[in-house]
Length: 240
Length: 197
Image 1 (cartoon, rainbow over the protein chains, first blue to last red):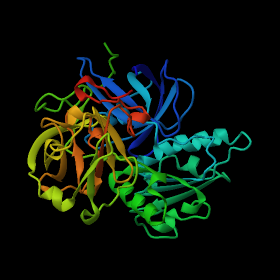
Image 2 (image 1 turned 135 degrees about the horizontal axis):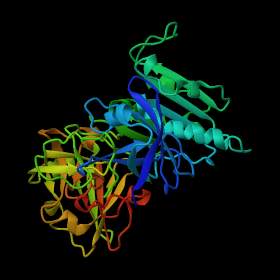
Image 3 (image 1 turned 90 degrees about the vertical axis):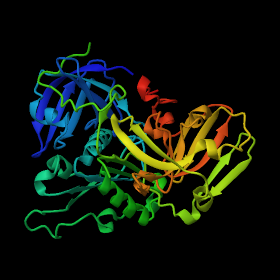
């Protein structure tokens, strides 16, 4: 698998710490929703740093969409969030990962559970579903539960909340909720993960992505609800 | 020579010693698992080694604890680019567990509680290269990191060090495990950067 030179063609701030980056990567053959890429930066003296990032959009083209959330004290993410600008060049390799993937011809209901920037691979799935939804017979129902600390931490909320009969979105605020929000801030509960049509008996495919502690908690709730562990796919970041 | 990324200088952590290409050093212990963490009680834990003829040998938790254990200090390298230096473990060497197992097999499939699998050549598990580890940094191994016991094969990328180990199946022919069927390298030598198939 070879590296492709990629050029930054777009950058858009999303939250106080997260930024959307669009790259043009000639030779990149596209990806499935949920896959990731390796991204490599090279300093003038040849020093290199490589990290893995989920793709925020899948497709069959040479455009690569990322959402990067800054890791305080990190080496690569602060550069991507603050310094990279259109015209800058870096390298990518991929797509990677064949398991944490949603196939747009799979009719099973899909429950997506995101902690913080763990929503990024789910954006790729939502976007793929909306494209596939234009074609008859492809209407897998989606439920997306997004847990964020505060309203300002929500990534692509407008897109997620856009009216869509095939998508239920639910927001969970752990530290600070918007004014008038019906429930006080708190961690995700089984009530957030329970909805008609998305239970263990509905053949639901479950995907959980987020910081390790969040994924451990959410996956524990989901298996406690009876979701078979083999139907709960997880992607974690950060230590424990 | 790769393209230079304008404005990128790198953080240049003081290298304590050499690490494999494409890796960076972290003090964290990131967790990568394909599914939920299974909670395996020691009272129902069992490890089974099955030979290519189907003959099985099993150890209960008490039997594992009764075997001679070793302290291991080693660097570990994850295919997602992080390396963790000088980690300390305690576990039973595979040389001990496989000492009385009659086999002419060349390959092993490690099997985990929860269904995970990974394949290795048998010779990579012998001669002081691999352990069934049950302590990390002096504490019982946390379930999130593979407790009660995981395979520890630190000279290969860490996905080979199967968490929640329950069995080792000896095989005449190489068969591919979970990540190996999902795009990752069949062997996984970090020094040769064998990340992907």
